Every structure is written in structure tokens, then in C-alpha cells.
Amino acid sequence: MIKIRVAQKVDMKAVHGLITELAIYEKEPDAVNITVEDLERDGFDLQKFDCFVAEQVATKQIVGMALYYARYSTWKGSTLHLEDLYIQPSFRGLGLGRKLFDKVVKIAIDENVGRMEWTVLEWNKTAIEFYKTYNATLDPEWHLGTFSNEQLQKFK
Image (cartoon, rainbow, N blue to C red; front, side, top):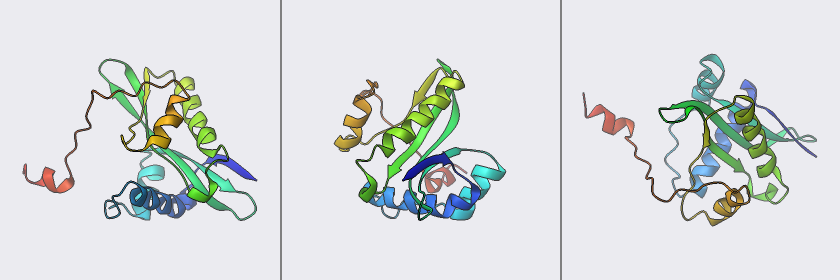
């Protein structure tokens, strides 16, 4: 049996492990710079994000997570951004992704946000098909722009 619950500070080691697994899956194994301590501070002391976890009840093992945070859109007002939704491969196909995603959707509804958003890699066909089951809009026209910390430092 697996339960979906709000993440606690003590879960951040497991969440960090899931984030690292996701980075490997997304072919970016060296991209994770944050630490467990960063997650603990940012999520619980500074309240920069919220998170749900999927926990295997018998073993207390965290096998999935959905990490999200509030944003603001000049067009839509309050926005909820789902940063990561990840289930360990051996626990996929049990409906955990849907349960976690539904929890985040409920938060978006309860907070009456103008938009809920997330990004998905164009090659991740499984995720794309998953979001299509929700009738989600997957916009191919927008590109994600980023600056790394190193790039930002060059502006000093």
C-alpha cells in the first residue's frame, strides 16, 4: 500500500534522491547542484516550495514526489508551477503519478489560480501522453529560457 501525503522536512533526503534520479532519466546526471540542506531550508524554513510524496507504507520508503510552488503571471495572476513529478520506475503503472498530479491540481483549484503550469521534455512521450489524458494544453511555441548561476555571474 502506498499513501500520498504532504512532504515533511525529514523527507528531503529521499526527495533529493528522487530529484537526482529524475536528472539521470532526463539525461542531465550532473545538473543537480542543490543539497538536502538546501531543500530543507528552502522548503520549510523559507517556504519557497511545497511537495507531496508517495510513501510505501510498510517500508516508509518515498517512491515518488510532486514539487510545486507559487508564481505570478502578468496575464493570469496567481499561478501554480509544478516543477517536478517523478515516480521511481519500479512503482510506475500503479496510478501514483495521477494521484500526485491530482493533489497538485486540487491545490490549484483551492487557491483559485489563474493557471497551473509545468514543462515536459519533447522526447518524454510517456509524460506527454499522461498530460494529454487530462486534456492539458502542451504549447509547442514557447521555449524555456534559462541562465545558469555561472552565466548570471558574468553580468556582475
